[in-house]
Structures are given as structure tokens and as C-alpha cells.
Length: 161
Image 1: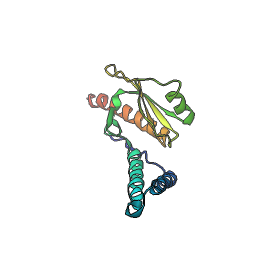
Image 2 (image 1 turned 120 degrees about the vertical axis):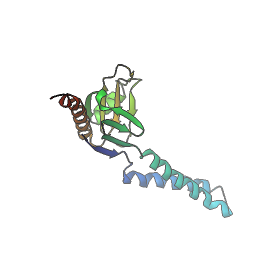
Image 3 (image 1 turned 180 degrees about the vertical axis):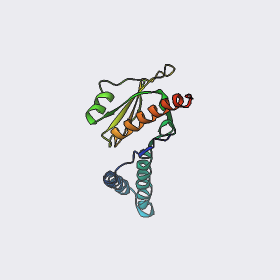
Image 4 (image 1 turned 30 degrees about the horizontal axis):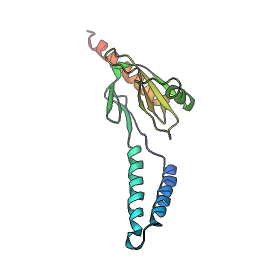
């Protein structure tokens, strides 16, 4: 039973503009110290490196599919999910600030205000919970709980005559 949820934690388009402008300004600063044919090198290096860096920061994908929560290359079977709590910006700030746990697994993007705290029920894992940024924390939490409930109900229904 699939409970698909997919999201990419991409950088919003409006943040690209100032970041690329800052990169161009930095390239102009470096350009001031070079003359002749080397004057274009800072623009050819700094601006593309900034674009690649921003793409790299926004590459993270979050998905609930095939009985797993997938966050980039991390996998969490939904059978180990005790609870999933959607967090707004204030709740995220609290759980990552004063209430932070040093063993928590955190994928946080500052340009995304919401998050989900996934409480774990796995005695073999010292990680108490995951905190994952999400633009739709309520939908992600609901998908996780539905996938967990669907997985725990499936073995019981299969054993009935």
C-alpha cells in the first residue's frame, strides 16, 4: 500500500536573484584587481560556482513511499515511527534551539519555515527523533502516520482466515 508524499527542499526563485547579484558583486571586486584578458575570469568562476552551490543546497528530496521516510539518502522504515508532529516556525525554532537533542537527526533548511518532528520507536537506535523541514508539515505528518498505520494493519489483516 503506497502513501506517496514527495517534496523537494529547493531554494525559492526569489532567493536566487540576490545571491547571484552578490556573486556578481564579488566577481566585480575581484575584477578590479585584474586587468587585460584575465578580467572576465572572476565572472566565469564565481557566478557559476554560486549557482552550483545553490542548486546543491536545494537538492534534498523528502518522500514517504514504499514503507519508508526518505530524506536525501537517509531511510527510516515507517514501522519505527512512534509519532509525527507538524511544527510551525516557532515550534521548529524551539526544537532546534533550547530543546535541541545532540543525537537528533536534522535536515533543516532556513528558507522553509515548517518542519516535522518524527518521534522514533526503535530500541536499537540511539536517535530520539528526526526533524525534517517541510513546506507542508501537516501533509508530511499525515502521510507518515497513514503509512505507519497501513503497514501495521497489513500483517494483521493478512493473518486472518
